[in-house]
Length: 130
Image 1 (cartoon, rainbow, N blue to C red):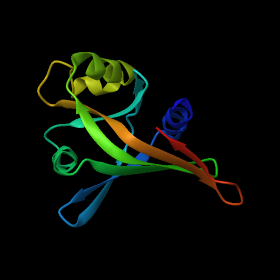
Image 2 (spheres, helix red, strand yellow; image 1 turned 180 degrees about the vertical axis):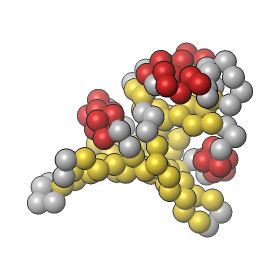
Image 3 (cartoon, rainbow, N blue to C red; image 1 turned 30 degrees about the horizontal axis):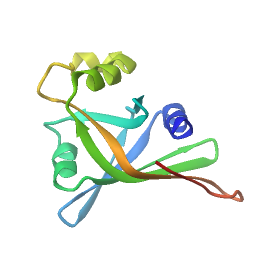
């Protein structure tokens, strides 16, 4: 799990794919956190991505860095605990102008049934189940 987290943290930007009805939706994200051994992302409940994940929790993200790329797939489960939200926002204090662990908008979600693949041209692909 640490290897997945470190890759995403160093890449800084990853692209999260969700589904809306029969249409894939992809957008850049930058928040990633490791809390209680789980990989978390953060968004706002008012955003379309939140509605999409509540309708269909299956998601995939992808990031590229230094000639390697990672793809993480699984289901994203909301965690309503203040502690999980605070941990994320403490890692990204610049978000505190828009989000707070006590508000009704901040949402953190963690992966379950996850698989990460790390690849590079000419190299063997590494697969990590979590």
